[in-house]
Length: 431
Image (cartoon, rainbow, N blue to C red; front, side, top):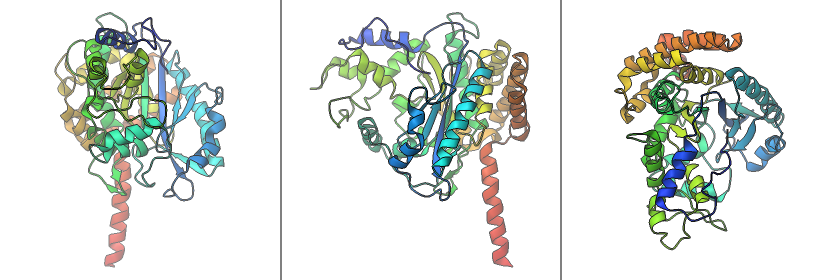
């Protein structure tokens, strides 16, 4: 799903502070009845025979270049590359969950065949703890991003080059006060965030060893610039987001040439007030700045849920279906609000500590496990009411039986495999 045409404030004219706040609020929370659904699938890419082999830009280009062209994928998805060579498959907005899942599945089959022909394979996991850490793409944006995050440690580079997610996109909602209204959908999306982190945690390793987190990916995000990765706080979501966006530091400043590094400590609001020798910012600069903000729920004219670890195989279908059901079905939304009462007081969003607990323990944390089970039950009922294809409902039911109902997540399977291997090796050593 992509930004629509600019609104009436103009793409290249100089901005005032008031105009900037108004533009953010208008563009990022477009209202209307919730109807559309989309999903973005990020995939790690490994050499099929040697997962530890470094990936070159040339090899990746040879594998997927023809699919990146307009119309390159039959289902209408677009394909882009992330800094570390991850591939992102982004659906077109669909009028139904079933339509979205079907079109993405078609395009994913084509993508898998293309990378397989090149001796590569797609890996669905939240963190790549196997392949050497390094940036594959060389672009001024990514150079500036790497430099920005490097000021506070190595984790920005890890996020850029070694993480992958399932990102579900749903309409912002209408102007009513019910579960279809954008204010309550904003609250519910955030309250569901830790539930989705816990249920689908799938990255328990770093550098080949257990990290102590079920979702190491979420732990990495927690170590980054909080002004662009944490949840916006306070009041009406439009006002809170506009304030958050303008107060965030510039990650990069587009210029002619290769150097897009922004002056350290310069927020977009400060740039509006005093350019510090740079050109004055435009509406187009503001739109670009919004693309460098990465909170767990990002408003882009719709709500982009960014907190879910990448899933193995076709496991991406389950979080997409569950998230869509819980936000778009009124009965399921009410049930989800009730199920998440212990995670945040009414009208408030979960604290950072709740997100961290979800990332560390997954559904083994009692209050999160209870919420996960209740939300899956509500989602299954909603999917049945919507007459979603039986294969989708079966996939959600199997996941619930294997994981949610047992207080487990995909990360636990990965950890069990390591524990069994360690126990076997120990037995052999002592025989």
